[in-house]
Amino acid sequence: MNRIMKKILLALVSLTIVFANVNLVAYATEGVNDSETSEAVSNTDNGTSLDNGNSADDEEAEDDEDDDEDDEDEIDVDDEDDEDDEPEDNSLISENVQPDTSTTASEQNTSTNLGQSDLNEPLDNAVPIIYHYEVEGDGKIVPGESFKLKFTVYNPAVVSKVGNIMITVNDSQNLIYPDYGNTNSLYIGYLEPLSYRDGEISLVASQNITDKDLKVNVVLSYTDNYRTENLHQLLVLLPVLKEGKLHVEKVDFPTAMRVGTNNRLSLTYRNNGLSTINDVVLHIKGEGIKNKDIAFGSVGSGTSITSDAYFEILNEGSHNILVNFTYFDNTGKNYETEQQTYSVEALNSDDSVSSDITKKEMHRTLINRYVTYGMLLISFLVLFMYYLNKNRAWRVNRSKKKGDNK
Image (cartoon, rainbow, N blue to C red):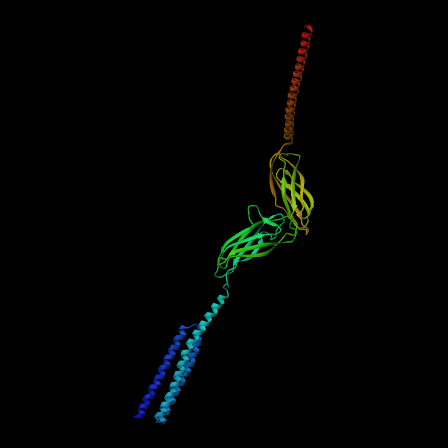
């Protein structure tokens, strides 16, 4: 009877081991389907080791059955049962620990990603920067001429915006100043995180600039996320045009132009560059105009010259006269100024002369008339004085005769 009970107990232990192994395999399979790719690979490896453990448990169970048949001692059977329970507990512990390990790795990855994101966050507050600046056009300022200074402001913060951004440009030597109708400040306003904003300031370069580069102070003011006003003073460098540059300042035409004669043109021009310009030539042309090129030679740096030029108009009436210069800089490069158009009215020479004669005659007649009136007035005054003197003498003589008679 005891032998039969032992066999039944051994069979129950074997069924318990097999049922536990089946549950563990199902749990491992479900973990592989629900976890990420890296965790699936890890759980698959664990499942493989788990199967190996189950095979070992089956072999141990068979060995236990053989030992039970050979040994009829109840104490030995209990010892073997205890040995069979130990692998079951170890496999369960190993399988339960594995999901916790994968979860911890996922949390570590999440923590690492958050750390990388935190590297892009500002340590304290947003600080705008002048990302780029340039002089409009060829990138150089010309003494005596206006220019536009362009700025690009950038907010590198990820979460914080800045407000009341303003840029002010000044120079201690007053070598640059605002253009007429403008100021030396640029208001940007608010700037969102990771955004840019462009703006420009219209300025004039002084004719007294002699250096090849001009240092300018730029003040960047703004209000941060804590409503604190901040000022950043920067120093920027503006390149000055080294080559000579001709600038036409003034062109004057006479009020009356004559056909077939030389008409005078007065103009003022200046070399705003830092070097001498050579072979300066004035070009005058237009419909009904006898085209003419007039050479003025060289013009030194910062030199202003006023000259006269004469040209001939072929037909009477209204004409558009085109005027411009060509010249060479000190490197031999040829330049041409922009053409300027002027409208004039021309008259025939005879009409103009007769008109002048008529005006002179009218003027002379008027003068003669005034002279005649003046002489008549003087003659009247002389006759009147003569009459008064003669009348007075007659009265005196008459009085004397009366006195003698008495």
